[in-house]
Amino acid sequence: MKKSQKKLRKSTVNNLINYAIVAAFYLVVTVMIQTGSATRHMKSMLVPICVAVILAVSLNLVIGFLGELSLGHAAFMSIGAYTGGLLSKFIANQFPQIPVAVRFPVSLLAGGILGAVFGALVCLVVLRLKGDYLAIVTLAFGEILRSIVINLEFTGGAAGLKGVPQDASFTYGIILVFITLFVIQNLVKSKHGRAIQALRDNTIAATSVGVNATRYKLIVFSLSAFFAGVAGVLYSHNYSILTAGTFDYNYSIEILVMVVLGGIGSIRGSVIAGALIVMLPEMLRSLQDYRMLIYAIVLIVMMIFTSNDTIKMYMAKYNPVNFVKNSMTAKKSQKEEN
Amino acid sequence: MAVKPSERIMVPLPSHSIVPIEDMHKAPVLQTHQLGIDFGGLTAVNNLNLAIGPTEICGLIGPNGAGKTTVFNLLTNVYQPTRGTILLDGYDTKGKSCDQVSKMGIARTFQNIRLFGKMTVMDNVKIGMHNQLHTSLLSSVTHGFGYKQAEKKAYDKAKELLDFFGMADLRHHQAGSLPYGAQRRLEIVRALATNPKILLLDEPAAGMNPSETAELMENIRRIRDEFQIAVMLIEHDMNLVMGICEGICVLNYGEIIAKGTPDEIKANPKVIEAYLGKKADK
Ligand SMILES: Nc1ncnc2c1ncn2[C@@H]1O[C@H](COP(=O)(O)OP(=O)(O)O)[C@@H](O)[C@H]1O
Ligand SMILES: [Mg+2]
Image 1 (cartoon, each protein chain N blue to C red):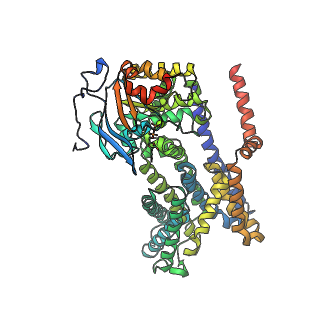
Image 2 (cartoon, rainbow over the protein chains, first blue to last red):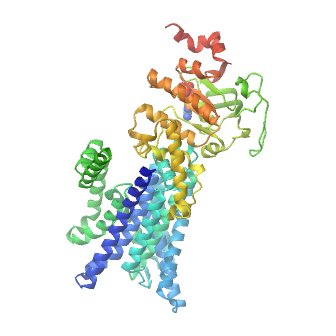
Image 3 (cartoon, rainbow over the protein chains, first blue to last red):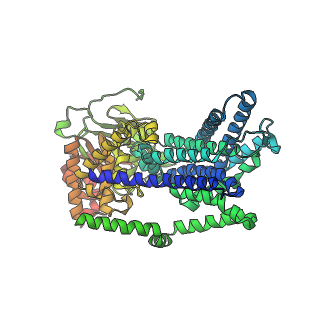
């Protein structure tokens, strides 16, 4: 029993570290803003970082925990972006007396819910598909949606949607990152999370012990799309103009790169890689033109590194985090023996 | 047989079935009637009639490719039968999905081990208990509303089960890193965690040495005695089959060619010809 408490504590600590990283980031940035040492350029990256982290963590739920490849995450994001954007614009015009503190959360929720609905719909369509086929359908879905949005009147068409109130702020972004982490980390460490990972490890065995594959695919796809939608709302309330072209497959690939770079199935990795992918191109402006090329190379290198057992072993051996962990557990077991 | 899926059907044991004496007056836990499946032109299983008593240990033997694993796949609804009926605890399983028949009380292991390799031993067993844990999605997402109590209950029960098989010390190990024999045992524990009425074991002794096989035999007996469930096993190890099975079915080319007690099977000329003949030469 004692062991179980220890084990529970260990996994809780792992989650807490992720919250701590986000909190520390928030504190440092707030202090920098207060003391005036944050540049305008830096401030402009804060909300996009939150957007990227939410996107990466929620896509990791599909890729890392359910084990399915989705290439349409930007599409779910665009559903949230337009739903939230249009709703906020409507509220701001019709009911200007409603405060931002009500308007923005309502839009966030609406964008998330509509994202989830589309996530569930796409999931129902691809239910019988696996692997490559599923990835291709999600990719196609994204492209179809983008074409539709460009050709619609009320979304602003190709010119883009103007006049979305700029309700997004770094604080809202961080709160949403916290909520995303809370929900997904908790889910993963529960009966439902175990079932999801069981489906990933061995679908036949999972269904043979009573896991309903359809139900869990639906839960994962809609939850992941919910957070993509929320990220979209945050995104659309950060810029003065919203164009459908933003949410193309390149964007979906960019989110995929965040997940792969951070490590498939690693939530902390997604948080860090999400932030990095936003900051790096901004810092290395001269490489802007080669962005997609660099992403492609990162994907290839990461895939080689994470699929080769020998390389993986060496990486684990010389990974400083693992090194510290191992020496700590070694000490602990020594203590226990004494 | 046209039956509504929800309707429980109780059929008296057919006269040709073999069940232990204490099961004679009870309804069979599993029955099949003229069960069959075709894969394209190939008839893999045909005219299969089985009746298994609620606490029977039943062997399913036959040469390689006879259709034994296919029978298990039919019984657990991995395949939908082309013909025939399956009654599990009296309920027709027609059109049910794998997870639904699991809830109805059938559990299995696989010829090629299918564990959740990246997860811990403990988590593998907890997934076996999936349908006995009533944690809501809300409670999972918030880790509140009874989450802690449910997890503790799951942990305690999983540990108890692992203890029963002497595996409690391995509970924090990754399932994929266990030695072969322990992986086979864990698969059985996971299947038992579903709280089944009947347990299907597909070649549980494959790749085991004699002492491991002896331990397995003992464990199968203990499972039946402690949990009071039926066990049906596919096995090539004749010592194991003859040693613990009360009834044996012999399958050849997808059809049952003999049923009987171990002694009857050993003496059956058809069986010797189809299957044991090669071994008798030794
Ligand atoms: N999914 C399938 N598709 C086509 N043929 C199959 C399938 N599953 C099994 N079979 C065939 O059914 C026959 C019986 O196989 P199986 O049940 O695995 O035999 P065993 O008695 O060795 O377990 C074999 O000829 C096999 O090729
Ligand atoms: Mg077989």
